[in-house]
Structures are given as structure tokens and as C-alpha cells.
Image 1: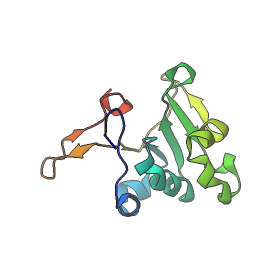
Image 2 (image 1 turned 90 degrees about the vertical axis):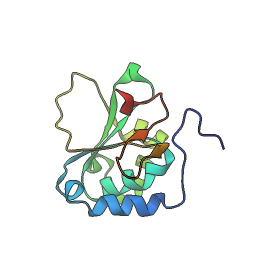
Image 3 (image 1 turned 30 degrees about the vertical axis):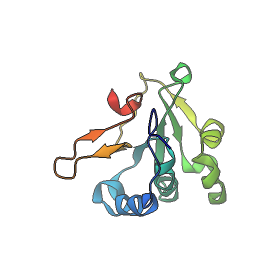
Length: 131
């Protein structure tokens, strides 16, 4: 599929999520922002499984800037798989507006391409990371 207006999924997305989980920055974080695209689903799930609060940028900013999902508000860990989907974010998430007072510890954004030496990235051109 073309990569117009989306972050493409890729082979190894689950491995990438596990590598992020091993980072000291992830392990220390309490509030983690993870983009809503498919390749980041495993990392969103890992965030909740680790007991961290998950912030996901919303595609419709009229109801908030982020959805905040607290694993304690989801309750049953078996529901975490649902909570990290678009429908689950609406069901279990709480809208957070720009004037909210959260301290974000880690931000993980999706990319269409990343330069292997400089880390410069190209996103989809329509999203949160371009702000």
C-alpha cells in the first residue's frame, strides 16, 4: 500500500516495541505518548502492561489533544488489547486538552523513514509529531 497520509506498518514492529521497552527512559517513565498508528500497537500495549499511563494523540482535536488511558481505569489486563485500539481509546481513554497539566516522560512517534546516522525523520505530514 502507498504510504500517503499514514505511518506504514512494517515487519519487526513488535521487535521495535520490545527494544523500546528495554530503554532506561521507558522503564523510568510514568506517562508515555505513543502515536496511534498500527506499527505502535505493541508499544501502546506494552505501556499499559508496564503499569504506565498512555497518552495517544487524537485524530479529531475537537474532543481533546490526547486520549489518556490509565491501566487502572481499564481494570482487567485482558482488556488492554482492546484499550489500545481506536475504539478502545474512545471507550477507556479520557480526553486531555492542551491546557491540561501532565508531565510527559517519553514521546514515541511514528515515521515513514528515518535517516540511520542522524535520526532525522519523515512523518506522514498530517500528525502530532509535526507540531
